Every structure is written in structure tokens, then in C-alpha cells.
Length: 157
Image (tube, rainbow, N blue to C red):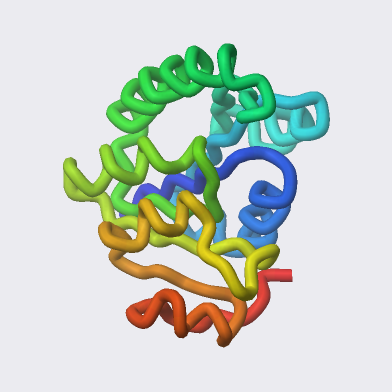
């Protein structure tokens, strides 16, 4: 029986990084969760029921962001129990945080891949997930100084 793996990230660069892992999707009973934008509607066409969307939110609009984040947290609870993954793999950001904590609480293994975009500073989500991650992967060797328990995985790209 294939392991259930939830791949989750926000849209944009984080999603682009996560989708570079698509060669391993078929090895697992996989699911993809990201924020819904016009630029990623193709995922539903390509992966069908394996894709679920959260509401897109940006901190540039703080008032509505709070409500969208709350909604996404509630939807993440629903998705987690619907999928009940053995593993959660994420490239970040805010969209992934709540489901990683929920997963850790209910026995999922959390694999976090720090974004390629940061080679000298920690991301907010990286700081939050580092303490609970079963595996924390960085794409730059310089990041091992900031995350000493991390594994250097090289570039996803």
C-alpha cells in the first residue's frame, strides 16, 4: 500500500519549487494543496481530484488576509482529515504552516524544504516549522549555519 503524501505550498515560487518534485508523485498516493490563482488552475486539469485549493491571500492587504488565513486554517483541518497523510512535504509559506502543525499533532511526518530564494536568512515559515520538522532541507550550504539540524539537499531547480 502506497504512503499518503500531501504536497502543500503557497502559490508562485514556492509552488514552482514544489512541482519540481512531481517525478516522485506516482510513487505515493499523493495530494497537492496550494492557493487558487489564475496561474495555477492548470493543476486541476492535469492532476484532477488530487488537487485542492485554498484561498489566495497576501499580507499586503492585512485586513482581508486575517480572514483568509482563518478560513484557510479551517479548510486545512478539513483537508487534513480527508487526506490523513503519512507525510506532509512543503516548500512553504503561510499556507503550509497550520497543516504542518496539525499533521505533527496527529502523527504525520513533516518534511520542510526551505526556499531557494533565501541563502542567508531564515523565512518566517522556516522558523516556525524547523522545531517540528522530521526532516528540514536547505538548498544552500550557507543555510546550515542557520539551521544546524537541517540536511543540505541541493537545488530543486
